[in-house]
Image 1 (cartoon, protein in one colour):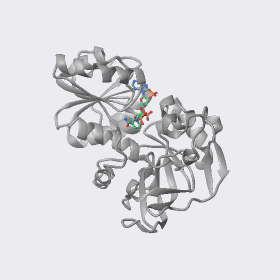
Image 2 (cartoon, helix red, strand yellow):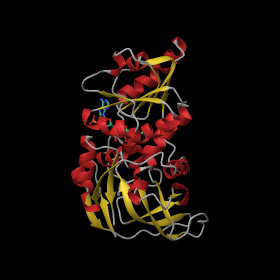
Image 3 (cartoon, protein in one colour):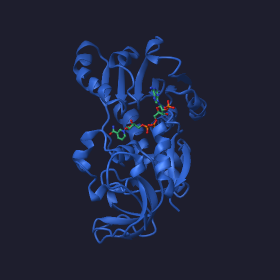
Length: 324
Ligand SMILES: NC(=O)c1ccc[n+]([C@@H]2O[C@H](COP(=O)([O-])OP(=O)(O)OC[C@H]3O[C@@H](n4cnc5c(N)ncnc54)[C@H](OP(=O)(O)O)[C@@H]3O)[C@@H](O)[C@H]2O)c1
């Protein structure tokens, strides 16, 4: 089969399209014929080998053989199943996030444990399905599980134009929140169309200094100081970050006790629970409440170009790879 392979860390240039052996599923795994995949920050970090702590999991000096094909979000058909697989069968159309099972999605076939995959609704395309796993889980786990977002509350999403934000805006709209989004000018019209009530171009305006306050802030960039964020929260408000600047995230971790001692404001750092809420996303999609925003698709042979495009952050929604 064809796959995108890297055997050393360092740059997107190390990725190669190669002919490799088709994998064989273990007893608890399925063999997936991949039709679509999407690009995530974790694919880029895996290839670059940064931040360095990631190498503890993936190989200190070189990527371990088990993670030499990047790609965590996938959708496709099941071609074969191991003898202990009970829920899924050959022919099923499924999707999921393989970040906890060795990546491997930028390939014609990948083996995955049954629990990492969810059945795909018939009306959802493979590209739409592969766009959802990681970004949608982060949005659900931030807005609902952690943020407990309610109708009428004021929500701000910082860095809203990518995977997490475009799904987050639609989920928040369905809940009935008043939504403010922050991103660069080129993404704001799209975000209004998805349901944002107010838009802020971060290159022109600093939302932490305009006197507005929010019940919940969801951050994908963590680009500002924690003291700035807390100023933009209502007295009982919560700040939730999913990623971004590591020093800023560490600052939020260390300031958390002080913030909760001196106010009723809360700060939370989300740790992704992969694939937990794909059933919920199926229902939201089938009800027409969430429509994934797709950028691309690139071909399998163009994964390096897709990662470069993602790295520049000019994309809207999810950068997609079509593998058929
Ligand atoms: N917590 C976990 O367990 C976990 C798991 C997986 C991933 N993650 C993290 O979750 C995040 C995923 O977010 P995503 O996929 O939505 O990212 P994304 O697709 O890269 O979108 C981020 C958006 O932020 C905008 N942006 C850049 N600089 C900004 C700034 N200073 N202020 C406001 N907006 C800015 C970007 O557009 P412009 O550049 O055009 O402005 C882009 O539209 C990543 O940080 C990833 O590392 C966390």
